[in-house]
Image (cartoon, rainbow, N blue to C red):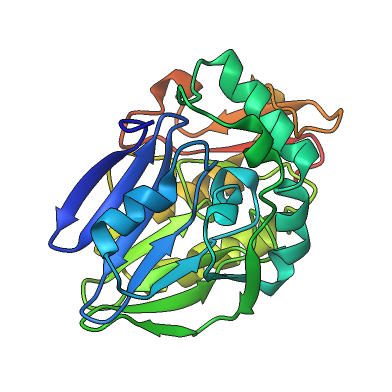
Length: 277
């Protein structure tokens, strides 16, 4: 468990915490407070890793949305956990014992559980003490200001966070290179495109998504919009997901690319079902 997480330092007091399920949590430490963006699957001792960097500073925790790969670590923490109000119910479902069993099963198949993983403890950790927050909410960490940006589409309560001093945007899954737009909580193509327009207006210098190793710039938002507008289910590539609920799901990339091209900086795709609209 000691080496389960990899901590990457971006600048003084700004870190990315990577876990083997290809999930990134973000940690920013101001002079007065620290802020953790997402808690991942929580298979490892995330609290220990965070506290090793924050010491005794008060910790703020934010979930970008309610899905279990962003929230199942919540139960390790005693602090309040901020989440978009429209994703509170979703978070409860995704941190339930049933959802956690599915997460364990998937991780075991890929040999991605830490050696000392305690399944009994993990199953009952719940969703933590959730507190709703809204567009425009400001977290002042002391020298670091984080502003909440409502970003519905992938889910109704999806939220981004803007690091105002650097103009860095943390998007969770609200905007990423292969966005899941087939889930029952998807808000519709028009809502998603409006969110991308909103994020583009911020003109962020760097964009950090929760499943990409390197930041992007604002230009990728145009690619993401194209992927949604041009998506053609009939030309898509099959995609397997336990969340498809019986629907056939396909990956629809732009410019003749395939899912194997995901590491290409010009790659953009949406994952949709036949009724995508």
